[in-house]
Image (cartoon, rainbow, N blue to C red; front, side, top):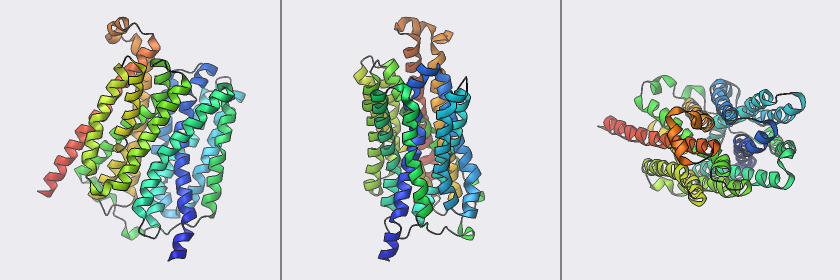
Amino acid sequence: MMQENISYRSTVLACYTANFVGALVINLTPVLFIPLKMAYGLSYTQFGILLAANYITQVAADVIFSWPVDRYGCRPFAVLAPVLTVAGYILFALSPVFLTDPFPGFLIGTVIFSATGGLLELMLNIIINGIPGEQKAAMMSVLHSFYAWGQLTVVLLTTLAVWIFGGHNWQWILAAWAILPLINIWQFCTCPLPPQIPEEKRQGAGILMRQRSFYLLIALIVAGGMSEVSMALWISPFLERAAALPKVVGDTLGMCMGAAMLGTGRLLYGLFGEKHDVWKFMVIGAIAATGCYLLAALAGAPAWALAGCVFCCFATSLLWPGSVVLAGRCFPLAGAWLYAMLAAGGDIGAAVGPYVIGVVADHAASWPVLNGWFQASGMAAEPFGLRCGLLLGGIFPLLALGILLWFRREQRGVRE
């Protein structure tokens, strides 16, 4: 038994590395937004399109690969995921070399490397759950926190690289990060993988789709994805352009502290969460996140704007994984299909939220309904638009709060 546990150490390490790669494919290009904007004249709407493409592709990967993973096993797709990361980064980096307008190449490259995220969401929980032993909860908590630690590391090192080597060297920075998925390819080629649950023992989708709680959980994780990812991906441009903080300060104190708060919230629940009701913490977090969005958007002092962004990440830390916890408790016999649908729902929220904020940031100053506020603010169009975008983002955790209350009422009705 001890030898069996030791033999899966490389598997666990491969999964942790893979979740780090998942953070890489989501958070690397947003740190490069301002250098790309300055070099190629891209708009915030185009950045919003890239963010939306990232998460829409993950949704498609969740749905498209769910049946093949069950049919052929995890290994082919575990290896494919980091291969797609490397291929997408190569195309993204070479787009300005071969295209007069690099944006189509950026978009196609984003679609390719974003498929990694969907594949990993689909497989990692299955792999960790299948490993023999009694430490699954601990491994799961560390697995989910690795995304946040990956986000922190990617943002910090990429920001420092841009500061030291200059934004014009962004392609070399991208190439350096491609080393990590190359290592992950080797890990999944060589590590043992546990056997999957036989098909005849899996609970089908029909029963779940007849339950109202199932749809509430999907809506909840959509709202959670919007709440968490919108703030996480817009911290850097917001603090630099709207709060007038230097990029290196905004990224290191904003995105990195935000990622640390996100990881800390998840790790704390992973260590102590079994003793407490996750629903209550999610309600508190949704209320706090709404206030943090408002604080960041309306604060006049940069320090208060920074505080609103950072503490919002802590407040939203359980909305996405907490939805998965609630789903597991509500439907304990459900198979991988449930988690694929939850992953797709989270990715939809993560695609819609940042895109909406990007559109508002580009156009708010020109909308007649906001013209009076724009004139009275005395701000330039860009910081005004970013503040309006973040102000709108406060609706996302408020929506999560409403769904949480509805879900609890639904569960009480079922028990009665």
